[in-house]
Length: 333
Image (cartoon, rainbow, N blue to C red; front, side, top):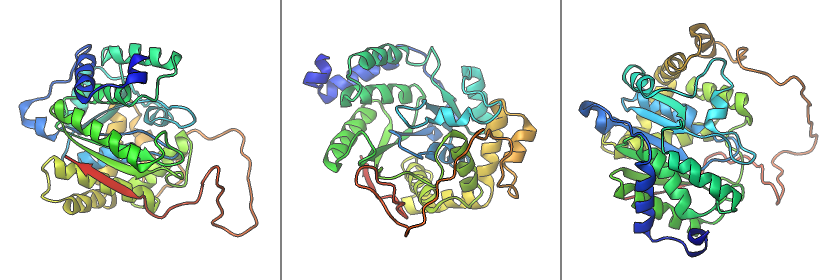
């Protein structure tokens, strides 16, 4: 509560983050791939399925992506919840299994295990019951301690800002972004923050299995334009700060290419099988001729909501108008 009321200096936040990091196990990578280890984290929003697409796309472009993700907060599903809608997908991996996935596939997406930053779980439980969840220094320490446990070379943080995000104005988002970059840099990680708009849902499908469907559509080169564009921009940033390409635009072209030449889709298929999905199910989901996705669960009951008036309507209390492209402000140090 004292931290919530009084705040912390940047140095204090970095010190807390380091202490939390060293409360558990830390991944150790071979010397020849350490410079390739990258990850991305989003503060989340409705329809935010970017991690499911970006991880395999980055791996298809030569990076190594050990992604430790979370479950949903509030009314939004988390990356782990979405992946668990795929029959057989295992989100809990041993360190040996995770290392094997990085070596053989190039990426994994797993949940936080009991031996990864255990201090975070204790602190979060305390924050939850004391109504101190929305505290920037504690949020920063929670996110970055888990990401630092992956022994990253580079990290991109997707900070959502808008009426459907916990940060609703750009000035606050920029202040938060600078704190994240300072602490990430103090941990020895090349850190970038993309501030992206969250005034409306991302993509056209919302719900765990439905968002897996839309992720697969995007990996097949036929996803919604806003999803593809955000994947391409964020992938370009990571390829650039990791030193794989000389400029962000070159990185964007490589990411876009992986979505259209099938390499990102094949990497996602290989990740599924490495994490317990039966090969025949993984193959059926990744079949480029199939948009039915029969292997994914379907709702037992459905209701059609029809609107006969003109399109493009939105309300002031809950904006749902679809923006063609996300608005992105990038802060890189």
